[in-house]
Amino acid sequence: MSIEKLIKKYTELLTAVIGDHEKVKASESGHDFEHALMVANYCVRIADNARTAELAWVAGICHNTDHLIERGLISKSLRKHHKFDALVREKLRKYLQLTALNEKDKDSIIEAVAEHRKRNDPHDNKITVTLK
Image (cartoon, rainbow, N blue to C red; front, side, top):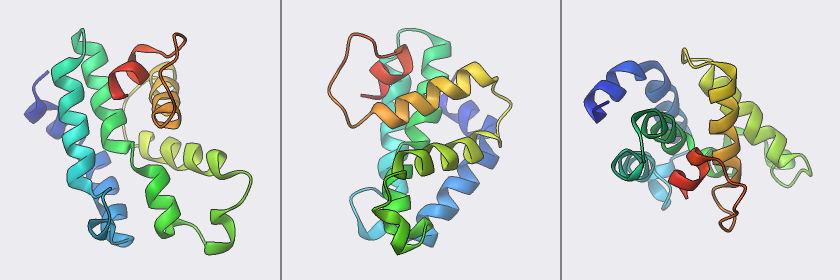
């Protein structure tokens, strides 16, 4: 699927993610929406098949979620909370509710975003490998 078709298909998701980037002034950091879009577009180019490309593109669009939360989508008292990963996953789940993806695909995307900062692992799913 072309990037133009992905943008059209996932307009509602894009609108939500862009809005959150603007809300926390992510343009003042290295993790602005343009960075997310660039990563997503590279995922399409390197994926080994169309389905992986689509899901990795969605993961790329969402992969700044941890930074958005750190920058203010949650209260300062929760930023260092021991359940930070759970908060990131909860926000990702809210984003993905804006899509028609099935639960298995959503889970793969959430896993990829949650794992993307870590070292490569032979157990990484295809979406995670592509996003990394």
